[in-house]
Structure formats: structure tokens, C-alpha cells
Amino acid sequence: MPLANSRGRFTIQAMLTVNGYARRVCSGLTRREALQVGGAGLFGLSLPKVLAAEEQAPFKNARAKSVIFLFLFGGPSQLETFDPKPEAPSGIRGPFDTIPTRTPGLRVGEHLARSAKISDKYCVIRTMSHAHNDHNACHYIQTGHKWTRSAASGNDVNARPTDWPSMGSVVEYVSRHAPDAKTRQLPDYVYLPNNLGHLQGYDRTGQYAGWLGSAYNALATDIQKRNSSDNPFFRDCTDAELDFRIKGLDRGITVDRLNRRSGLLAQFDDARHALDRTEIYRNYDNVRQRALSLVTSDKMRHAFDIRQEKDSLRDTYGRHLFGQSCLMGRRMVEAGARFVTVLWDAPDGYSWDSHRSSEHLKKHLIPGFDQAFAALITDLEQRGLLDETLVVAVGEIGRTPKPDTKAWGRGHWSHCFPCVLAGAGVRGGITYGTSDAHAAYPKHHPVSPEDLAKTIYWSLGINPDLMLPDAEGRPVPIIESGKPLTQLFG
View 1 (tube, rainbow, N blue to C red):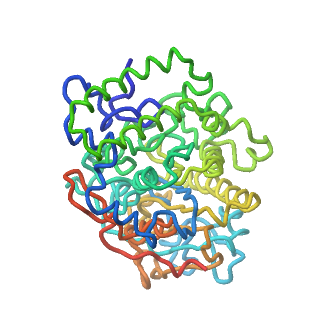
View 2 (view 1 turned 135 degrees about the vertical axis):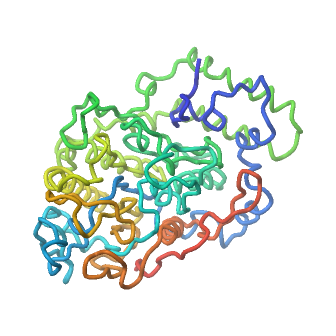
View 3 (view 1 turned 45 degrees about the vertical axis):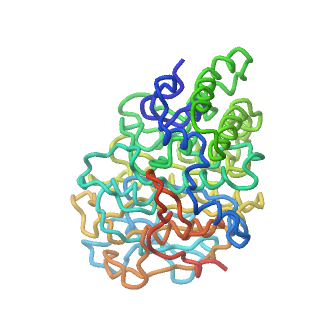
């Protein structure tokens, strides 16, 4: 029975694949693939020494136990959200008014009323900036590494095994080799509600483990849309649709079914015994045992059942797909996951990619984000989780200062766009960086995707200068440049 689809989606079954492809071990497992299964060999000679160093042990002295990464794919407009310019000329400032917040001097778009009331809980970075003015910047934002392929006009969008690993995959990788790896009962990288692009028929780059190997991909849920024109982010969803439970876990795993799944593991065993009997392969058993424990985990089955939440709280988040996914993200970190991506995708081909008009921004996009974001921050705080959870809300690009259409559609603009940080000791009620009068370019303190990635790693207690071996075993930094924005933390 097949254990993964051709895209290598990380379900419970896909944990037992190599590199996300249906390769049969009995036909020959390469030494490199065996290392990817075993995990230990990926550390080469440098990382064990790094992890053994008391002062650099992973997750030690962390500001955050978990990260919730709210990824607004498509590119929210800075001028309609967190960097409006009410004094700009009429051809720049846009069709919406601005409103004050609890933070003196900070105004936001009028459709962020709930977020305005809790501005003392978050920091607004106004100067995210990079040169990749296209949606393939989803690789840059999720990995902290520039996209290595030449296409930059929306082509060649699908992920490849040679891509850089996502931040979540690096966290999963380091976590599996941390001292508490055997005791963890939930995957440390979870992707909700779908893999990026799957509702459009793509499998976009930046979300996977890339050359680290598919064993470190996220565990991704799979919420479908009703038909080709449906957008579940724009409407209330039924409980039948919002089945975040991993398929197969809700019914339990019988001994017979588990025995059938163990067939591939037996093949791995045969191949492993044919290889050199050295220390670097012993960690293979840990990967196998962890996969089987997750398959049979009562904690996982319970954590992914959103029906456990009160109706009143679910209403607060919003019954649309993003709101319910944010609530599920809170359930994941509460259960112990370290890195959870909550995605607002573009099932209609546009959504945050608002080329055509500002109508969807007004009716669905900004109000939907506003509701879910404010509910998430409030819920985390009430549960005592905000101090240990870093919440990051960002798109891969922003929008052009000048509109493309009379209906206030704006084009791609990667040169200046906002990012919001909250929790884990982030100083609330502040802004960082200043954009120019048209929100077109940073005026002070530009922030790169590398800076953001290093900030996230630093908050989790992962050395931002950590070295990992690449696919050829050569040591490379998890992030090549930039610096963590430690000044944003109290």
C-alpha cells in the first residue's frame, strides 16, 4: 500500500518515506538516503559538538517555547493594514480611512478595529524589504534564504528536493536530535490548514525540508474546498469541512493495519543491515519508533480534534478557514508543537494578491485576519501561553503605493511591507523601522527575511549561527546573513 503521494505531503504515512518519493528500498537504498532516514549522519562532524556544548544546547534559555507563523500568502497591502499613510496624496493613500490604536502615534487601517484595541500586545515592523518582487518569495520568507532558481515571474513555482529547508523543518530537525527527542509526543513542525498552493493545484516552494530530507517536512492537514471557485477563507465552514484530524487517527489504528504499514520498515531493516554497521546508523531506530508512536498517539488524536473547543470560542476566532486554523494553531502549541504555520492561501488565485480591486480587502481579507489575530493573541494570553509563544504575521511581499486599477487593486511590491510580532517577551505597543511618505521604501532600519529568520531561531533558543551539513555533507549556516532583532524583546 502506498505511503505517500508524489508531492511528498507529510502525513502520518509520509513520515516513513525517503525524500518524499516512492522509492523501494529493496531495489537499492543509497548511502545518502540511509543517512537521511537515520538522521544522525546529517550532522556531519560539527553539529554534535555544537549540541554538546552546554552554552549552545538547543532550546535552552529560549524566549519562546513555540512559534505560530501566520503566513498571509499573496502579499497584504501595507497601506490598507499596518502602515497607512493618511497624509499621502489621494492617489497613494487608498480608499480606506485610518483609526487610532492603544499605541500613541500608531494608526492602522479602519478594518483592523479588533487589532487596534490590543496594539499594546504586539510590535509592528514597518520595513520588511527584499528584492524578490514575486510570489516565489514564499521561499525567502519561510526559509530565510534567497530563492536559488532563475524564474522570478511566477513560473517554476513548485518545490524541489534541492530547495533550502523551511524554518519549521530546521526546528523539527534540531528537535529530533535534542536530549528530549524521545519524549516528545507531537511533531514539532505542523502546517495548517493545507500545504501552500495545494488549493490552487501547486506545491509551492519554501514550506518543505528540501535537502534535509522529507523526514523533516511538516505534518500538514488537508482541508479541501467545495469546488473550483470556492474560497473557504471567505465564508463560514461547517464542522464536516473543518476536519483537521489526521486521516486514520480518528478511527484508531488496529494491529492488522499497523502490521501492514510496518512492511516498508522491514525493507528499511534489510537495507540497513547491508550497510556498514557503524554508529551513524543507530539513530534510524529512533526515527522508526517515533513514526510508529505518532501513528498510535492518543494525544495527537485529541489535539487535532477541533470539536473539543467551545462553540463560543470558535465563534470568536471566526468560522472561516483562517479563523479555525488559528484556533487549531493554538491547540498545537498547547499540545507541545514548536513551530506551527497557519496559512491564508489563495484558493481563488488572488485573495491577498489584490491586483483587481480593494473589495475583497474590505469584505473578507482584512476583517477575517483582524478577527482571528485578535482572538489568537487574547486566547493565548488568557491561557498563560502568550509569554512563551512567538506569533509572527507576515506576507511574502507588499503592494505597490500607486494602484494598478481604478478599483484600487495594487501590484506586487517587495521593497517595503509590514510584519507583526507578539508574545514571547516582544515589547508590545511599539513600532520598528520607518517607511517613506508613500510606504514605498524603508527610511530607517530595513529588515530582511534573514533578520526575521534569525530572530525566530534566537527566540526559540536555537543558535542563529548554527551550522548544518547540506545535501553533500558540507557545513552551511542555517541563515547566511542578518542579525536577530533582540532589541524588540523586553
